[in-house]
Image (cartoon, rainbow, N blue to C red; front, side, top):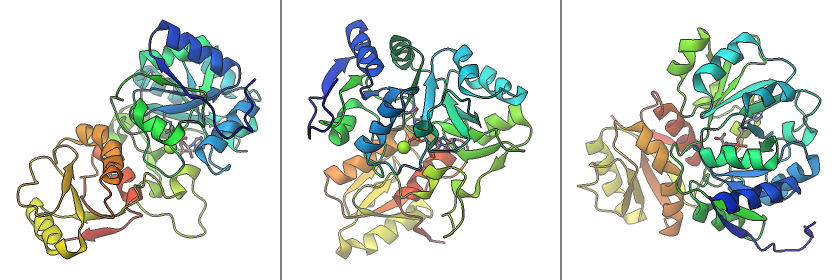
Length: 347
Ligand code: TXA
Ligand code: MG
């Protein structure tokens, strides 16, 4: 057993081949932490049924202890062991969207250690679509608790190099499965309530969910800052999140007004985060994150672009606001948190 009191671990770089996956499974079944690729973002995994291993996730990330984790499975039959019961609407969602970027919350079974649920009576479960994630869950045995593999508050990592930026020396290994396809974390739906509720938007959109569920409430925290003193349904939504070191402000406007506004702030030395093809008139440094009408690409690029802003030493960022429709709702949800809910509307 590794001495976790030691300041630094030697974080193994594991290839996503049979040897690497077996090694990751081995470390995980011994209670170690391994960062793993998924189709959404990289996860910081531990054996979900080992409370002590799970508590190390919180230490490595600096995560507040009241923020519960998602349990990842590689076989739908394992779901029944983790929750009290599976209602019909949950099965319908799983039929349609699993394996995939959808997390379903239901009342937890007694198997789930309290470290996973942060003391809640419910547990979030996801069956990911990435072949390497599935192989590593099988190599470990049954289920892996895994939040995004960033230090708490930072943008989620979408490749192994970004994981190491935050986690080198803090975890036993990272399994390198290349870039994540979706780029933002899974959609989270709570089915433990009288009416289904979207807690976090992701690659599975509200429209897609409504095709199966007929009724779906959208938690107010998806698009608005939680009011002081209110209880937030998804604890993760109350923290400042996804933030680069720079101060970020979202600009809701046409491309022309965006350029005009940012250029007028030149004396403050801002950096622009804008859409592809809208960078022409900018007189300040900029990064682009996909076309205005292509939310899937925006989702895939956003977190890495936020980290690139740090790499470039940006201190003040004006970001073109995404349209909050379809997958764009997930992009908007992440970016507005990165901006600490600071939005300027220009008309
Ligand atoms: O795509 C994903 O979901 C990634 C990859 C690694 O699978 N994981 C991920 O985990 O994003 P994390 O911990 O960064 O986000 C989990 C979110 C948090 O906002 C947390 O508060 C919420 O899900 N959550 C987990 N269990 C919950 C529960 N029982 N009730 C309400 N919210 C819950
Ligand atoms: Mg996270």
